[in-house]
Amino acid sequence: MPIIKSAIKRVKISEKQLKRNSAYKSRVKTFIKKFENSLNTEDKDAIEQHYRQCVSVLDKAAQKGILAKNTVSRKKSLLAKKFKLHSLNAQSEAAQNPEKK
Image 1: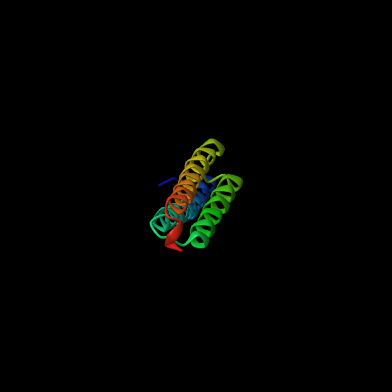
Image 2 (image 1 turned 120 degrees about the vertical axis):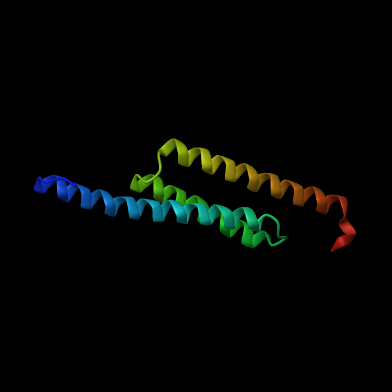
């Protein structure tokens, strides 16, 4: 443990920041998992809602400095790719099976 008063304060601040950052990173991971799990369902609205929530949470994490800008861009790109792929698959299935409605 540090002896100098300013060093003691820095340790306390660092611990507080670590808790906040790890909680926010956990929140980001949770939203990404919810989005990926919603891809298995047929509910387009839920998928789009989870995608928008993921993007929003990632943008806020970059804005607050919790995640690096390039990391957020990479994660958003992967999510967008999955979202687009799922919507294209849904459209192609609907085109192949018009009587399913």
